[in-house]
Length: 138
Image (cartoon, rainbow, N blue to C red; front, side):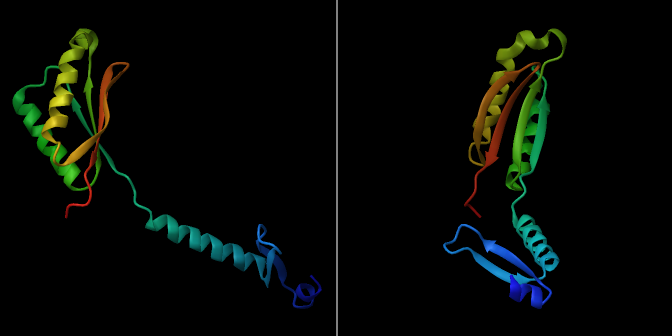
């Protein structure tokens, strides 16, 4: 600590768990700045998970289904996760089985592009299913 005072710098504990603890004589504000810079660089390198949503009705027609399926294929090829859900309006909640069949059909047809992360699950007025893209094939 005396040496740090003589140099008008700070004594900073680098790794307290080491035996004996490791300390450095540096300017503390500069140390904090460098640490923030390092953390920011690590955060920038992390892969960001993009979730794309596709909404169906319980009685979605074949043409509309195919149109939305093509979008789902594009999303999975881009590497985004897919959240497909069937939204039940008013009394259409009685068609829960049709909604589940629709989502399972989508999962089966997208099997080569992605794997189902969560099977269709009813939450309130919507039945949700998650599909993650398959990785490794490029």
